[in-house]
Length: 123
Image (cartoon, rainbow, N blue to C red):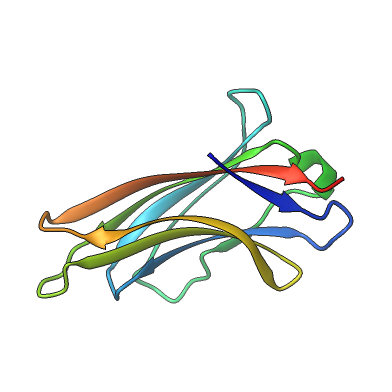
């Protein structure tokens, strides 16, 4: 699992889910408590409307240390386009500080990816 290092004294941490290649779809975003099967945040959305797909994680930032951010995202493959790109981006202070993604070509009607990153506070 990728580790994303954040600044505990910086601005809010933001998790954003995107779908590239103009493919519609939907997602669930979850933030898991460190070392526990407890959800801290759960959001749902889709790539069809203009609603924002970026979510601020709980403050203070220090409590996000070792939490896991997960996105289960599904893209609908719309022929003739077979390419897809599902991405979970972690941002802070206007910059991307880490990401996980699933990119490829598909011949099936849909593609689902389960994307995970662990957050780690910078020393």
